[in-house]
Amino acid sequence: MKTIFTFGTLLFLLNSANALTKPKWVNSPDEFCPPTLLCAVGEGTGQMNASVNARAGIGKIFETKVKSKLDISTSSSQSSDSDSILSGGMDEDTFQKVTEVSEAVLDGVEVTETWESDEAVFALATLHKRKAADRLKSKMDELDEKIKTHFDLGKRSDLSKCLKFLKVRTALDLRYEILKGRRYSSSVSYSDIMKKKRLKSKQGTTILLNFKEVGKISEVASWVTQKLLDEDFKVVRREKRSHQYKIVGGLNSEKQFFNVKGFVRYKFLLTFKSMNKNGEEVGAVTHTVLQTGRSQKQAYQNAVPSIKRFISENLDQLNME
Image (cartoon, rainbow, N blue to C red; front, side, top):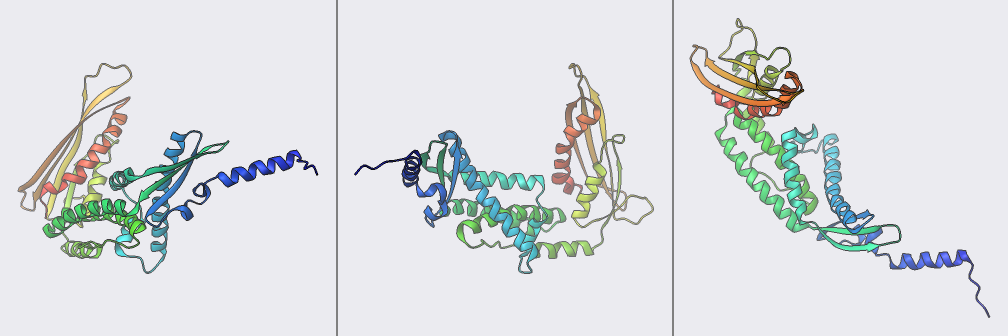
């Protein structure tokens, strides 16, 4: 008896054979993956492209699960204080530090399997959970030392630094929880820090801010005001208002020689001086930034990151505790 195969039958048999040879991890990495590993599959036109996408897949697992945890904590009465400091988003500096640590953790990702079909190449990336968690724990221990040191010093600027470090630590702790199934507690909590900040706020220390901008293009006074408010000072802008300290400052610009057609170079000089209510100087800081642009305004915009960073990191030297 002859067996007759139609074209459709042959195609079905070929596809069935191909399906039998396809590794389980291609379509079901979670089922294939042992409990000790985090797994992701990447697809690409070549092995290198597939491997890059697989590694990126591990990172996406972290980000997706962290976002889910934050969404749940935001809407739940069970959310912890430490989670709440992240629910409003992270500033650029905090985000950068979290990204740097996360990328270091992802250095442990390995591509352990590859498989090629007629249409694409697939790669399986794995991350050893315990080893990755240990790296996160080590980074959190470093942050805990900084938080404890600044918390014990207890100045306004120190407490602000505590909150900044705690934001980074909380973001890392959420990733640690994904790997270990539990959180890694800190000796200093968000509530502890806020309790000290509220005591500072109750002192009602008021600062008179007298700041001269560069024309109408700069906004330094608003950044300084926000920094002072974050550190629980009260800020006034008129001489007649009662105050304990006074800040006099300005941002000046000087055009520099720059022999490139269509561009200009400016030096921006930022100065601050603080005085107590008796008019005695108690602190002073200066900062110089040299930047180029197609106009003074563009040069200023290029100088903004340096100016903001200086204000954030050095305003405590005005000694207005």
